[in-house]
Amino acid sequence: VLILLISISSFVPHFETRGSAKEKAIQFYRSCMDTQRIESQGNQLLKDLINQVGGWNITGIGKAKDFNETLQILMGRYNTFPFFRVHVGPSPSDPKTNVIQIHTQNQSIDGWVNGWSDLLLVICSYVLQVLRVYLSYLEKLGNLLGGLQDGPPHSFSLTLSFISNLQRVITPLQERRQRGMLFFRTTIRELQEKAPAIDWLSCLQAVFHPIPMNLSQPIAVHDMDYLRGMSQIIEEWHKERVPHIYMIVCLVGNLSPALDSRFQDARQELSKILYGKMESKVVISIFSHFSFSASSWQVAPWAVHSYYSIRHHMVVFPAGMFRSPFFHVEFPSAVNFGAIGVFMAHELLHVFYDYMRPGGCPTCNSSMLQKSIDCLVEQYESFGFKVNGTSTLLENTADTGGLAIAYQAYKNWLKKHKQEEYLPKIGLSQDQLFYLSFAHVMNSRLSSLDTDPHSPLPLRVYGPISNNQDFVKHFHCPRRSPMNPDSKCHIW
Ligand SMILES: [Zn+2]
Image (cartoon, rainbow, N blue to C red; front, side, top):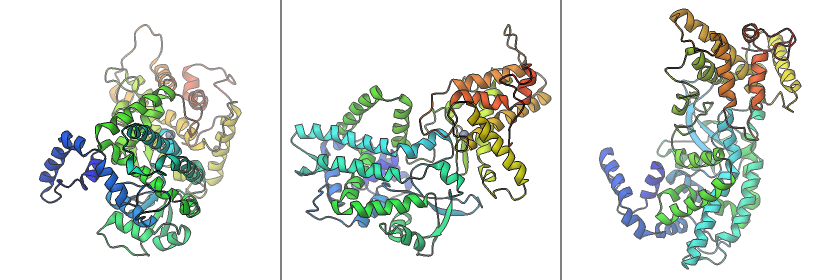
């Protein structure tokens, strides 16, 4: 929100951009707190800005800007990235070197956040709905944004189908992972040939100004198929100026948190509608998208979803996970290791996802590795939940391995500390408590979205324990009983 406010402040006339960082911060704070002025300016500033970048008008009357020129202004000055995101981050093969990276939306390897690229449609239609609510409100005031007869409402339905077309060319994460296409090294010149609708050099220059850049600049692309498809779609829809309207929808969505209270009211009104209809989890993810798009975290601090971000090469445990039932200082360690310990091991295993793809581990015994992979794929498909063992493989590996590693870590902890709390009257050993805690937190999670790369929840407990020799031992499962099958699979 801060960055968004900064962006909007850059076209507020009284906002001074000179001075020390501290002075700027004070000025910025004052300009945000000056609600009277914000209210009195109303939507004039937004209207001016929309006109500056070419207007809503779908017929192209007026000073229509060139598509790429508008895109550059949005990316360079207003932190708005309608088609793809750009950042500089460590290269996965050499974490010490940074490289410019281009990707679709927030992408990470773990399930919940992974669903985001698939939520693109939901997020953008959310923006459209906000605009609809706001526009109908303004219509009542006889003050339509832009004041054009063939303005936004009619072009919204076109824009929605444009978004769903874009959505369709995103390559699912699992597929890119399997094809080893998560990081495709290329240059601006090559990218220009493959996705010609975008003026890549000018766009990247606008984002990274004043750093010099030329066509030979090496870059990494996260989903080349998407960029190619996106370029075609932009060209197909270009005539009707739909890509342009879409860009402005994104801009308005990005800036609206900093606008006057009517915009906030419209958002609130809409959130009420959305809360009524959707699972709160989805809504929370939409709102955190708006509030956290400028920060390096992809989830809110209070979230209970840890993840591994390939992009930042970073495992994230939000503060929300350091409380019951995941963790508590007064819980027996068996409970903590069985809960947050398993999630930590799970996320850390994702860091090594590369070893699993063909040729990803030159020093491994490849036939052994392939046997273990086949074993896991077959096993998860045999549980009878209509699971695709291949597309859930990485998660199943991390689930099975995470449980085993957290148990090992607990045993190591016991050796060092020797003292462990017992829960009175529960009649469970420490080892049993560890496994019970694991099953408890796993099943207390919210049910998954359709796009979740994890197995269904029962399998996230059932799979790892039926592959775990220690579980079988501590719960005295007879041989070939449901949780003690003869064939046990694991990679880590
Ligand atoms: Zn995972």
